[in-house]
Length: 375
Figure: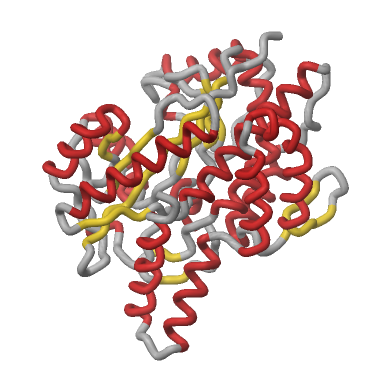
């Protein structure tokens, strides 16, 4: 078996806020034009006018991804500032409301709204997608089957959406609660081959229900555009360093699982029901609680599971040149995710005498600062 390239690409979705009110604001046409002039196809509008999406080029390693992602963040920030706006890398805005936002007038988005109605209109959420180059189609499916087990671990490390429309939801990733109202979401089914996957997808395409596989929004899927396996479960990380850690973990995990297959082994397969339970626990608690270790059928703290994950992928991270980024997962698990930091800032502001509205704005101010870290 020829070894995959394990090339990497990162897509991030940002929210745009008014620098005075800190509320969401639409991207003016001039802003998008300026971004397009600088970034070309690496930037595009999103479903809502207050969103903007960027994507790195195909990168050989995390070092290249770091350089390009920093350039993308700097460019969007500078262009937005010219219009009194700023980007946030966060999966939900702490207090703005979804029904105050305007839609982007593009054919794909109009069709999505017509198809999904109210479900689509509530999609005021952002995420991060990581593509890893897996050129062999059947290996892509094999790795999708194996890597599904680890999707809750990645979610637990990435949670950044505790607030929704001014309320603390009690969840670390409320984004998934919104997103899971969409059809064809969640952990992927298990397939035995790429041919079986294509036959399954073609069945609903032939009915006219969807036009192509880009309308399948699983947490992990074969890209319909590139020879990659696309991980989509993560909330977006306000700090670029945390985003790179998650990307490095995903890249290293794919190499580790590929190595198992080369030696005629694989990660043990578990029932989707059990893995979905871990997905819920990650959505609810982030890194502060436990996931089920399905091998020993016991709840284990996320911090311990992250240690085990680092140990599993460490030799591969070393080969890929991203060991430092992978080891930063330990810090995230121990210190808490963005969801924890947002709650801490909100509670501290309220204790200091701020109103709830003022405390929520303090959260946005922190998110604005974190967007620029490391640029």
